[in-house]
Length: 459
Image (cartoon, rainbow, N blue to C red; front, side, top):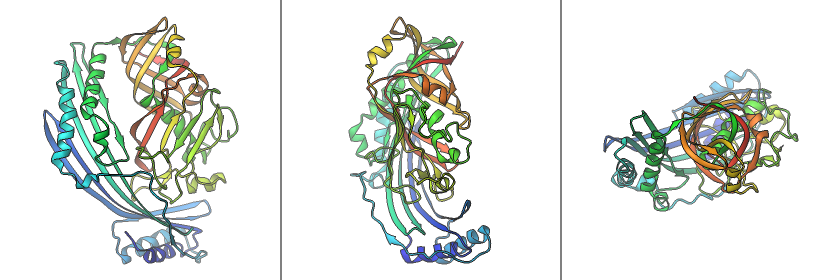
């Protein structure tokens, strides 16, 4: 992408005013998509993102610049602008790069860019019409198939010169149902760090039918009663609560500045002893996995919480400087135009020892959240509010009628302590996580869990 020799020149220019660390991040990313609405393909997208981000540190000061001009002259100019913004001084470090090969545990058999758009449209249509034809009450379906070919180069003053190619693909289906009580939505979005072979491993039509099933169930549901009660949250995308309400509070972007609810609590109990949580960027072909992060640090399996005890944070280089701790392979960015910071990869609560049937049977009256929707959280306080996409009341230890309009309200620290049962059906689901360094692919996950008491919003 950019030669090692030119990278050395650019980094030397960036460090010329006294930086103690200099970094170059280059990318060329191909984004492709096919979208359907009203029974036909309505849009085919194909775009390229290409450019370079340059960053320098001096102590606890950081300056970043970016450019789309990847000529030698353009790169040197951008590097000198970053150096000038850092201040006046003399070069204190020498730049010697050595190519590093981190290996690739995410094999891709069929590169999406080599597959005709008509073939992608056929896969999408299979999912789309499976949802559309599921029931006359399905009044609208939309869908999309996207793939990303993300090529990056990281070079820095610690001697790293490394390249990676990250290929991902994902299917989206959203169905809307109306049974005379107002419309309700169901959706699915399976994805992986794989090529087009992914669609031989999953059934696109089954994904469409699942989106329709969820919409139909919720369209026939009454409203959820409000109150404080036990809540059982199922696996897969149920893990979004840990991701949002707790995961962001374990990132150096908030911990390093003392604004996290978990700052300064390493070694302390922050969760029920049944809770072990991990961020693992090394899972082969997982949606959020990386061979190395966007600063050139190898990906890690980081145990965040072990039997309720806070064991580690997710740390980037600059956050690590403030914390006096080593980076953990969690530095990520949407593109060269964003400044890297600490982010999650594949974050999940591990399997526990409770049987799922015992978890349900333990609840006399409460809510079963089969699937979670979106929400909001304040990382400083951990306060969150999440919608329940598919919910049911539990009565006398049995799952009963579906309910709509449910939401879960609380704080991350509170919910961690109240997870008193953890099941054995761990699964993960795919999402896009937005934060200060842009939107990045992440997996969330958990087995079925029980929260002993939480505020449920409803009617």
